[in-house]
Every structure is written in C-alpha cells, then in structure tokens.
Image 1: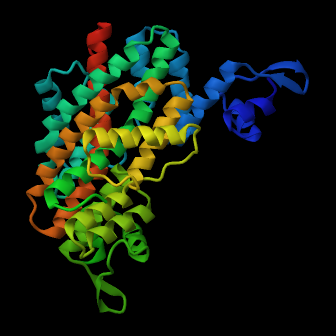
Image 2 (image 1 turned 180 degrees about the horizontal axis):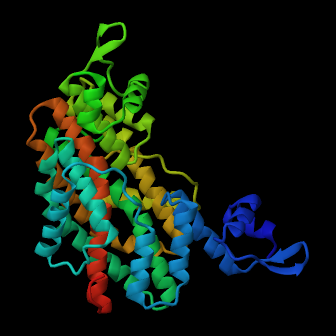
Length: 209
Length: 209
C-alpha cells in the first residue's frame, strides 16, 4: 500500500509516519520509483505498536527504539525479555536520603519472597529510590504493606506469563511482554484507583462517586 | 529558619524553592524584613512532598498544585480522597478504535466485582482507552487476565486502606492517600517487573539476571 493508505489504516498522520522512519522506529517502505514507496501489513502493525507504546504507555521515542530493538532481537527468550523490560523501565531521578537502608529493605523482600532476581536489576533500584522517598517525606510506614503488594504482584506476574505463554512465535511473545508490561502498568494504575474508590466508599460509608 | 537552611535541610536548591513559591505550591515564608523571610518545619515537609510527587511520581507542576489543593481542602474524607485521586490520574491520550466495546468491558468488570464506582470516574475511561489500545494492536487477549488483576488490586487497595486508616488527622490522611497512590504506582510497576523476572526465570528455566 502507499503511505496515504497506511496513514488511513492506522490513523497516524503521513508526516508522523515519515518522522518514525527517519528516527529508525519504522522500516522504510520498498521504493518502487525514486519518490514512491510501498508498505506492507507489517508496517501497519508496527505503527500501531509504536502509537500504543507512546500514547498509552507514555514512552519516549528513544525508549520505543530500545523496545523495538528487543522485539527484533534474535537472543534467547529470557534474555530478550530482560532487555525489553530494561527498555520499558524508566530511570528514577533523585537521590533521597536513606537510599542505602531502602536498598536493604528491597534486598530483604527479594530474599523473603524467594524471587530469582539479580539485585542489579534496574527495578530494584527504582523500588529502593521510591521507598527512600516514602521515608524522606514521613510515610515510611508504607513498607508494612510491601508483602501484600508482593503477593498481588506474584499473582499478576503469573497471570501475565499465562497470557504471553499462549504465544508460540518468539517475535509475538516478546511483543506481548513489552505491550503487557507497558500497557499493563496503565491498566493496573487505573484499576487500583477504582479499587481504592470502592474500598474508601465501604470504609468511609458513602455511595459511589 | 532562613531559605538557605531550608534548602540545605531538604536538598532543594534556593531558586527552585522560590519557583515553587511563585507557582503557588509552597506558601511564602513570613517576612521579617523587606528582603528576609523565615520558614517553618511545615515548609520543609511540604517541600519534601512536592519533590517526591514530582521526581518519583512524575507529576507536573499543575498536577502537584491540584494534589496540594486536595490535601489542604476541608471537605469530607471520601470526597477529598476522590479529588486527590482525580488530580493524580493522568489524562489518557488517543482515541483508539473499539473504545465503545472497551468501555463496555470495563463496566462489566465493575459490575462483576461489585465495585461501588461511578462509571464517570476518570480511571474508568483511562482503563477503557488502554484496553482499546490492546485490542487495536492485536493483543486483545489481555482481557482474559483482567479478573486476576482485579483480585490483586482489591488486595492492594485493602492493604492501602489499612495503611492510611492508621492515620487519624485528616490532612495527614489525605496526604497518605496521595502519596500512596502516586508513589505506590511506582512501587507496583517496579515490583511487577521483578515478579515478571522471577516468573520468567522459573518458566523459561535460567538463573537470575
């Protein structure tokens, strides 16, 4: 198909498509003349993936590029999953006080749950920075609910793996993990808020809002 | 204390403190002379809260302003919680195809779980947009795990309410909810990734990474 048709099919504007090609997110179309290129169904799929990661997942162009590199990589599954996950884990800012103590708390949690996780994983540091911030602003008591969160996350991870485990093709598998991780964060954040409203309505006794 | 001391105590640079005062995030200090103001411990606490919301929670200045307005509001608890939650719920972009069907799926989930939630809640729409995006990019099967997510979220919301329920002062209560919602998202996202690594290691059979 021509670029105009690709644009209509995916709802992505033509200049944006050209921008993605220039940025290396989308492979160029096959040239049929010096000024004319044709695109395949695979371009449309990739475009929808890029749009979903950016608009709903809130990823930057650079993060999308890393994610797609992982999706396209020929490495073994667990390694690719790790790379994809790395790409969709935003770096955390700030250097709160008590970071050492918080790192220790995360290491303790990992040990307690028996998680097979390397402590150099960027999510360990992300968690430590967040816990240290909780402490910094006087809400360190949050750590008392960590095991409830961990149990919930184990349940979610199990369901997520069941979901992606149904996929047999490696490219699709990695895509599922990336999409599930990024968009799953969004679902989880929204759903947790809804569960909060329900829990608050029950506890503080009012009707729905 | 003087502004320099406030800066040292909180690790926030003096120009940044002045910027927050201009933006209405932080109350001005009490003037002791035309060019000299003093700040209280409450300023330091508020500054740490602002920093945590921005750096770890990733909130914009405008969102922080809304959150603080909710924290400072004299409304009844459940209402304030709703306003605070509203402020920390980022608007979702995009208008994916199949949004109507996705809205229906969310309404069904809310009914099925018996959640006391108004369907006009912004998190309902956020969830619908995300689910529609999953469908758009060919990963609609994700919806099969929604009930696992919902059970996990109910557990988390219960733990969260236990955590904030220990607070008796309303200002602190609302602050707990806001902090727990925003920073809790960050903890949850990081922890889910760690649980993924563990689940993937067990399933695809390799050592920790």
